[in-house]
Length: 153
Image (tube, rainbow, N blue to C red; front, side, top):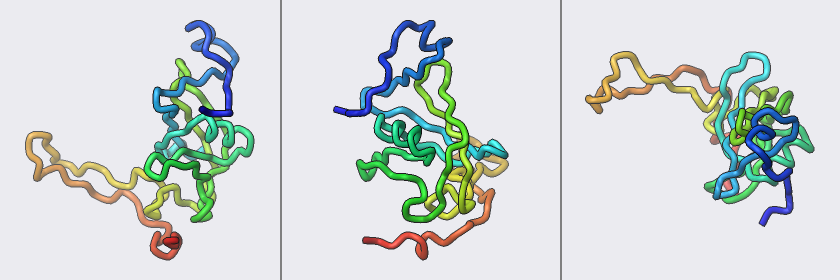
């Protein structure tokens, strides 16, 4: 059970139009988080937060997420140096999605070394009925080589 307690959710009107943060975490204790560059609005990444990650983000103004694969908190940039400094935290209408607008320090948001996790796009000519046509093409250049940044422990 989380020791980070946010205000209880009240009426639909208060959740949707009120002035109190009442985040709705899913049954797994997580809330989706979209992260964008605060200047360009480019989508940098999508991740999840638990209550502790959200509280840490609010307190420190450093983007903090919950890693589902590692089952632990991670502060963006703690290993790579490519931190995300929160300029604005927004919540959607029913308070079940967080949107962070960040300064993307170091220029890379993706662990694969790209400015955004969305560095590939579906190529022209794709046809959902033809698996062979579903090709991805790179839409960005790497900022860093992950093999030199992340050291396996």
